[in-house]
Length: 281
Image 1: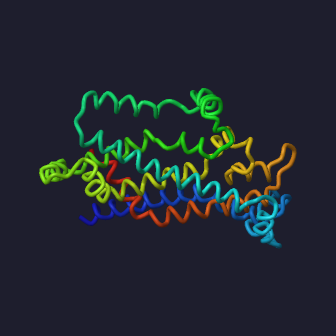
Image 2: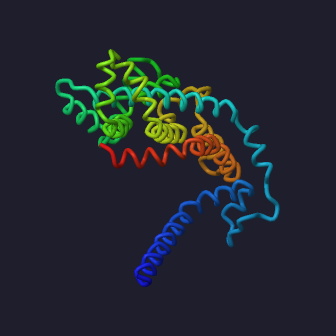
C-alpha cells in the first residue's frame, strides 16, 4: 500500500513539474515584453540580458499616448471587439439551439456543411471577400466591414451545439407542453443554462478580435480614423529601417490590459465551459 501511494505521489510530482516547466516557457516571453517596455531601444537587445535596467524608462508609458492617438485606437478596437463578440454570442447560440434541439429537413447536412468552413483558411477567400466588401457594399475603410465579416462563427456554433446537446431534451419538451414558443425556450431556458459555454466563447472571440491585425490591415488601412490599436502600434512604432522597441513593448503591454480583465472576470466560467463542451454531446 505504501509503495503504491508513493508511486502515485511521485507521479503527481512529475506531472506538476512538467506543468511548471511548460508554464515558465509560456510566461517568459510576456516577462521579456514587460522588461523591454521600460528600456531604451539599445537596452532591449543588449547582451548580457538584464531583466531590470539600471534606469527604468517609465516615461515610455507616457510617450505612447503622445506619439499616436492611443485612446482613439483603443476606442475603435473596443467598439469593434464588443460588437463582434455580442453578435457572435447571439448568432452562434441561436443557430446552435436550432441544430441541437430542433428537427428539420437536412439538419445534419447543413450543420456539417457549415462546420466544414472551419477547415478552409481565410487566406483562400479573403481576396473575393475584400472585392465584395469594397466594390459591392463600399465598406472599405470602415469598421462596419469588420463587423459584417466577423458576426458569424462556425466554431462558435459547433461549441455551443456541443453544450446544448448535453442539456436534457425533456426540459424543452416540458416547456413546449406548457405553451412556450421556441424563442422563449431559447431565451428563458437555454441561455440561462449556457453561461459557461457563453463565457468561453466570449473569451475566445474577444481575444481573437482584439488582437486581430490582418483583418484591420486589409480593410481599415485607407481610413486612419478607423484604425485599431494593433494597426496603430505597427504603423507608429515599426518603421521600414528602424523601430522604437521600448515604446512598442510599452504599447503592447497597455493593449493587453482589457484582455486580461475580461479573462480574469470570466475565468471561472471559462474552465467550466471548456470541461462541459468537451464531455457533453
